[in-house]
Length: 142
Image (cartoon, rainbow, N blue to C red):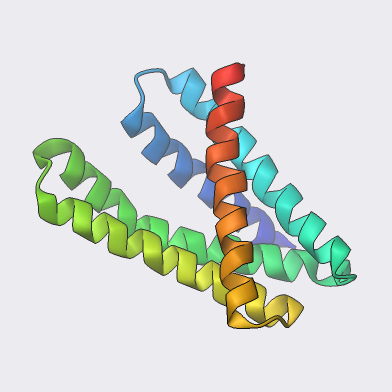
């Protein structure tokens, strides 16, 4: 449980730093990252509840957060590079890291709820749309 909390806090801080780098308003970035974190926790909980595997919530959520944290550590310097230079290579590298994050989340879903690869890709797509675009949309409404 302590590892889960550490990952949740680290994830929030790293996501906030990236979001604050992209926006001018640190308060808006704080709320958007907060909404994104809540949507992440709720989405994983809902998927596991519907699959009747809610008993592994902490493990699966920790796996998703930890993998996102590892990839985010690699993304932060790329975001700074992208912001400073706008070099096309930085965009390509950011895309590769985003695809890596997507692939890891799809794999975690595939293994956690024992589904085929196509279903895990669809679920991971829905996860990213729900958490990232949902947080952006809710942040814009608030």
